[in-house]
Length: 168
Figure 1 (spheres, rainbow, N blue to C red):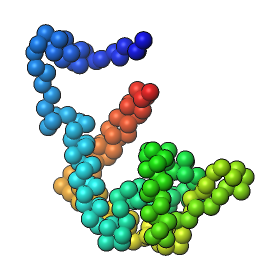
Figure 2 (tube, rainbow, N blue to C red):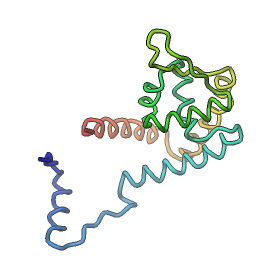
Figure 3 (spheres, rainbow, N blue to C red):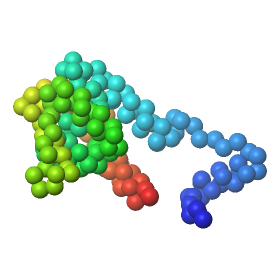
């Protein structure tokens, strides 16, 4: 039997209204999730236009970011850090390997594992691409006070923790 999910009172009221044939209202301009999605898409669109000049896709960007901080991860570890399914990781790594950004090395201790290492070319992209990410972030918060930016960071971290606790 499926586990009954306990809704917060506002969501319970909306579910009850729907049961009685009433329309549930939830406007996108007040939905934090919707606003986050739209903001993320705007960030991604601008960043992609910047990094594509170096032949890097937005999908590859996420893997490069992780590898710049922790080179030599296994494919599985890399997938987990980026939050991608392993087949998606394999596809991205194939493209990155063809472009000379990474190399795959069979793990000496466990031959079933493959470790991913940045090449000199992949490592050099850090100083080329990160300034674009910094610029996009700065432009995104233009006109927003430093206090509000810090409050946003704290809020987003709290939301991430809240949702992680609820994930199956």
